[in-house]
Length: 184
Image 1 (tube, rainbow, N blue to C red):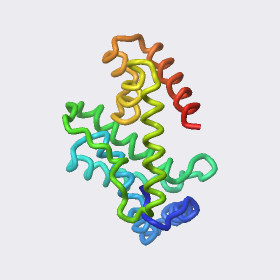
Image 2 (image 1 turned 90 degrees about the horizontal axis):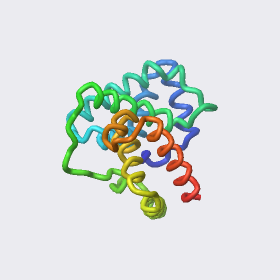
Image 3 (image 1 turned 135 degrees about the vertical axis):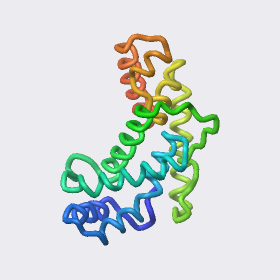
Image 4 (image 1 turned 90 degrees about the vertical axis):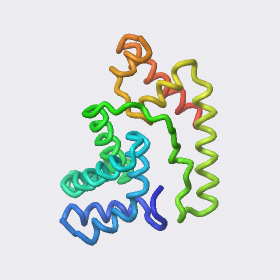
């Protein structure tokens, strides 16, 4: 969830300025994106204090790697979210945190600056995704959630579901294609 009034073009401009080491642009980029990135990191790590620390590292990486951002390769939000997700997954792999009992879905927590029609649209998309996930054969929906929400690696999924790595890769690939088709 981005702060209100920030478009992809605005974020591209901010990232270009950050690449030039513009501290004001960096501060504005943080204000525009920190909630979304924190939600991603917290969903994966499940520990607020750790997520806050990792988020600082994410923005340090953004500061350092802003010159490598290419708007023709990815949207600013995708680029930032990928950095956040990868850093959180790296932390899990490094510390092998135990699973948390409390499962909070941060996508369902609305941004206080989100317009009502945006909130309604987001809820509809999430409901549609949940319906599509229910349409997957068991245990593929659980596997998709474990991989893309919890950041579990293919190797971890292979052990967890007692399947060869190649089977896991195939199931993930086919399940994503099925979800894409369902979401259209």
